[in-house]
Image 1 (tube, rainbow, N blue to C red):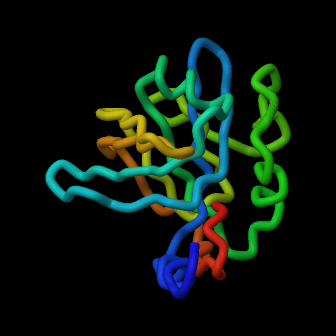
Image 2: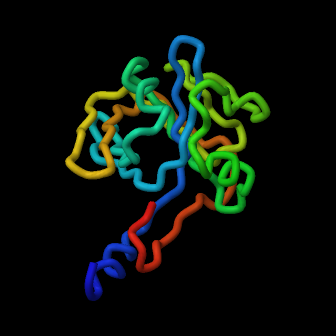
Image 3: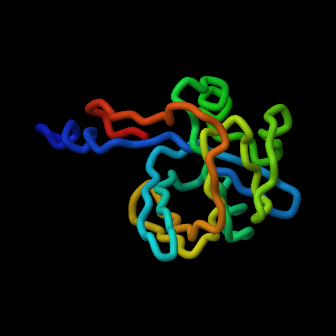
Length: 157
């Protein structure tokens, strides 16, 4: 991209969340950077996520996901989920979790969580897809500063 467009887009604040899901005994998670509330009644969120991740079939089949808001200083989760986990492995074996009503893991060290029912999957003609979730349950788990950042001039997420 030319000019100031990348920099202007980079000024849109983003948060860092661990999206988790579970289906048929398999659990997985992936870091997502683009999450926004998109409705109040009922409460809904929209997530933009890279296509082709091992977590996608689990979201599709379970029709649910949990968003765990990561603390700014939580380097453990940021490192562990910097690359998507292998589809055959449970990435939560060494991480304390509890189970949401949807069955997805909630990471106990998260600042907050939202347990969501998938209401829409939008396949865009890009490298990202959109997932719209109706928030069924949520809460604040720990005090802490949520990981929020502004991107530099690159558009890589």
